[in-house]
Image (cartoon, rainbow, N blue to C red; front, side, top):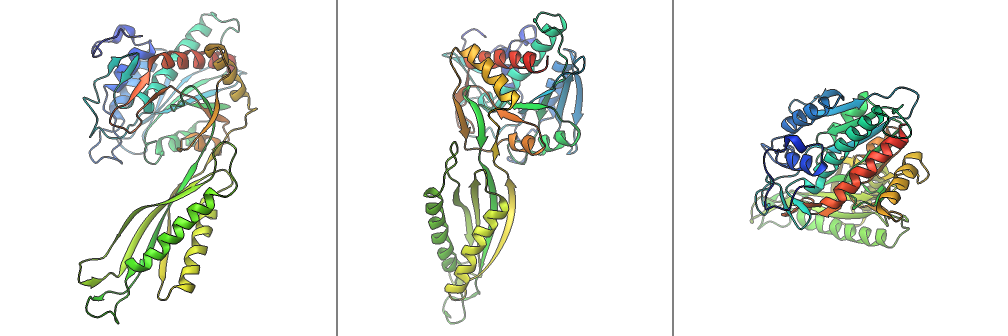
Length: 402
């Protein structure tokens, strides 16, 4: 662990096999997702750094860049054959830097925490999985473990664009697979076996433009939209009172954006609403679309002059792991060994690339560092948890791939 200092020294090359030192170097690289922030740096520089770091430690490095300037890396340590392969997945991109309290690219340590944009979400997970894979493969090659050399491949997927569209993991899965995977998103060292999905929809309520002095000619699209917003709130109340998933609870819905009208003296011809429906296992974009269509069709029948257009946007499936899957049991065992107690088993409300891995037929779970401040004005990782995560991943790799 780095010494307790106000800031992290720039020259860390001799120590970067330590997860704390490696994390400091990753934080210092701007990797803001340009799909979220116009002009964002993207993943090119951080992918270059990770590729060089892994190649220097004997990994076979593949660079994937279907979208120019948005590279993902797949680094492989080949096993001797006949063993299970394990993929560790983490995203290189971060949200924006504006509004961060202090310099977001200057890693600072205070009270056992490292601060900086991406420290928690999720360069801590990237640093831990890189160091763990390097340690596990180096020790196995040197026969430092009782199991000897690893028989299965160790695959690191350092991906682009998770904070927006997850194009990085989608691109990786076009060419690579594994017998199991661990996504190292932050989880407070708790074994995360499920998370919600989401579906975005656009609802356009149609009115008729007319001069404000001619109400007999106009139809107020904004007023008509009010009927839908009330019905949407009622849907949210019904969801909250309905059947709950044992880990995730119930699905939710909210209106995210609304705009309409042109000027004060004109009846608005259109009102546009963007909404988000968070889903739990058993709910899909199709079932949500049916749910919304039923509400809108009822309004079209009961509210005079109510007309609408419903358009499906981005949607991602919820995720639920098999608690008896070998990778879940293996990681849980080593987490208990390292922590001295059985880890908490939980679910997460936000979406992750676990859902894409699961859809591709790769059993997986989420397990990462402790800390706070994802997408916030102050962000940090607990450095003790970073060390624990690295040790747990190292043991899990050695066990699962032997």
